[in-house]
Length: 597
Image (tube, rainbow, N blue to C red; front, side, top):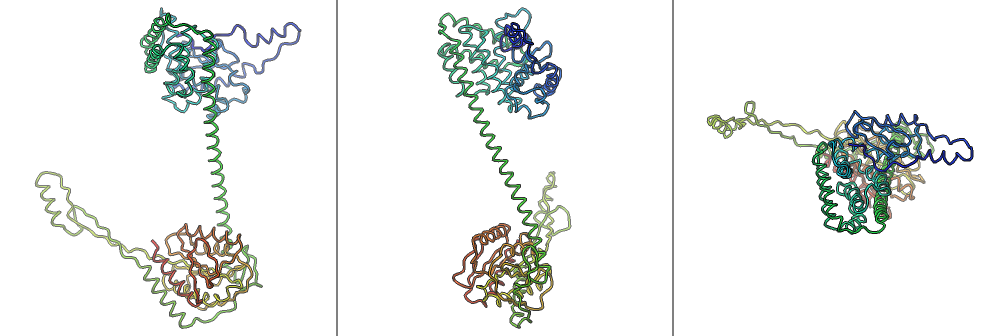
């Protein structure tokens, strides 16, 4: 087969034109923008990529400004060579081109599309025309080969479709401007080049409508249908089947010869075909640009999402570090601290300690029994069967096994049943209490102090792994009870004289100190507040409440007056009598441990 090429070689090269222009005025000849030797590396790297594209390792790629055939690129089967015009990479310089790097081709899609087209020829144009074959038939076979090899390549590498569409714009237009065929054969060649690519999936049907309508008008519906059937059959031809390929080409020539005498050649056919092909290529370019823009938008959206997620993870990690530091400063310091750990003794709400009353001790005992009952889990039973002991014998299964053995079949009955009983672990309890000690919450101090002692005492008596903690908050934080396994001996009393709020940091300290987001325990956060906060304080508290509820921790808000605000995400419980706070907290703790799975 002769070298495959797409345009006729020009009479002169661009360098010859430049030299001729400067011959008359005596100026020195212009220097080439890049020496041919600089493209040797590019050609070698293209050769490395050609192995992946074509599956052949016996081919050489030469890249230089201009080609011997005059085409943008050409495949020489007998020489095992693909030549490539370096001008396709314009305006890139050789040192800017690195085809060996996968993905670098996205910077020069037109050049890479032509290279993929030649790789398709290298992989699939392996048939050879016999000696003495009609040159016209061979030329028709090469015409049919254009879309056949691209279709075969697309089956093996469907992701190269974008580049093959780009190559069509680079290769087909020059073929239209410098036609090898004339008259009706020219229209048939355009149909094969454009509509043939449509039928193998390179171009879309809507994009090629201008060429389809013009070719049907010029060739007639019957001839166009015949030609379509021929190139469709050629698409199914095997790579080595020269006989079948030339037979299709002969049928192509015969169909044109039979229909040509009755078909007038429209005036300015070449211009008409060029205009129709231009419309097709413009439509394909617009589609590719839209797809590229959509892909870029999707990539940008994914990048923005990834960046946002990374920022969220960084912010969450930073909040966890701050929460750990806050919990350490609050629970390891005897006194009141600011969220950053600085002591603030002047605003300590603690007024002293007292011995628990008999009623509080009885309440703690009752709550301990209730928690123990709520945490109890029935033993689980797991029954298994087996053909051999140990286990309880099932006579029906034993008789079935004997019957199976007597019948000569493989026994499948398993007459022994074994029951394994396992104790379910008792979940511990985690209860955090955040009490607002601003001036409006003075009525809650005594009942909450009592409730904190009752809950801490009951949890310690119920399970050694249970933990409770209580924090009094205003602008600063004060630990009233700490997350230890020891039952408190005395009740800590406090007063409410604060003038601001800091519920967000109080929740962080309780969350980290009690691991309220960690599953496997009955988890409850009790917030005793009227929630008269500004918008920033409310937003910070609501964000943390949402994180806890999402993690499965129950959040209860206790209020004492009807004018109290509701923190979104919490379960609101209004207590007209402050003395009922211990009972309400005890009930919520019991429900939390009962719901634990």
